Image (cartoon, rainbow, N blue to C red; front, side):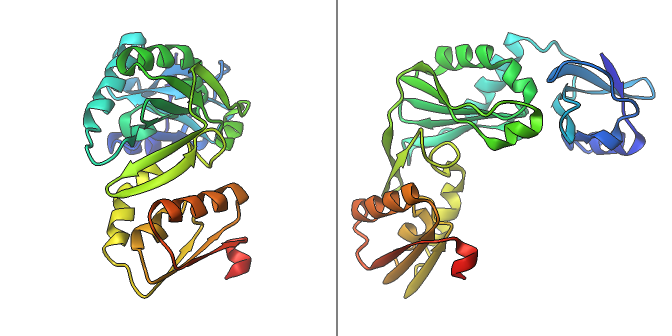
Length: 267
């Protein structure tokens, strides 16, 4: 199916911006959620995208080249993403970063032999079975857990959290540089831990001071890296607060306070 986009949409795509909104489409067609379409401007092919009329972000680019979107396409994309993530200072990392890897709506985090995945677009959700088979073949995980993300509601999808393959650890200890963090892979926020903030945590660790205030603490990563003489953590989740306590013990942090509160009210 071809979908005609506006001049402004065309100019965006020429700059390699990967999203097209409803007002950048000439006529919204009737088609299934997550259909694969060709975006064109005045009969010129521009990109191939996932299309979902229920979403404000109506088209999400898969490729700017005219190629077949099949199992081999996704396999190559996933292989390329994995090759980029070769880290030796941790046992946990984000393997696939959605649009950053031209896999819109797919997040894959690796915790040892566990994979935690999120499918946040209708298009990627349509290929869930294919994606899982590819991940099993390439990575041989112990288990794969799908973590439901509320953004799925905007795509007209049900929010699901479920084991998709094998058996996944309930709790897992992340080793990152010389730090350790306990996380709950099934119950924690997002996919269990903010793995994409590794570099920022390391930067904060170089500027530890007399006092550190860690807001929206989650597992306490920033405050623990800062290793200040006194640290105050503020976090609204009871589960996260219990993880902060355990993580402080794991990393030998002694002079700290954990406040269970809404950060905005606390401030």
